[in-house]
Length: 278
Image (spheres, rainbow, N blue to C red):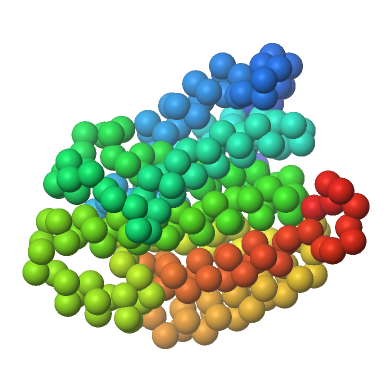
């Protein structure tokens, strides 16, 4: 074993945990993220590039998670330290995700300026920072083994997927008016308009469900585990048919999200459960 490497990893973990504990102790009474965590999240959103809108290959997502691991670990060390911290981070991220879902909710009118834009400066795109916030809320729910946080995250991301599909369709038609037939074909074949954000969200949900499926003690009710087992069977069968692995996330993003929505429904409180029961 590389002793120096081991010491460096230990020191890094102590630093991360110390920052998270400090942030927890100084958290605002209002339930907002403390300044240290707001800064860390802002830095992470600025650094995390996702697929950059140029690719439907969320293999890029794993590389981005690895590249930004130190900042991600800072935030997760804080969020998993207590139920209160987890709720605070989840509320912050879900608020941003829900704002996007509401802005591009199917049937709403999208302003012409937004639809005319063919490119955005970094930090100005409508979906800026959403994919890493999706990853954080699901990882927080998984590490805290919270059915309530998992249900809220998955329901929110289902709404984001619907909004992403609607926005992708309207934007494509504004850019290429003759694309109507192609869009119809895509919706018939895949269940909706494919988009980089949709692929990124599907990847986050896939990571969540697969990680829960292999956990020794996932803290997941049996109804939820049944959905996850169904998903893993479908995933294995579908991956065996793919020419390229990323097609699972790119072209099957709506199927993946259908399982995620089923899982959210399975995590709903049971009738007769005590108030506050996950």
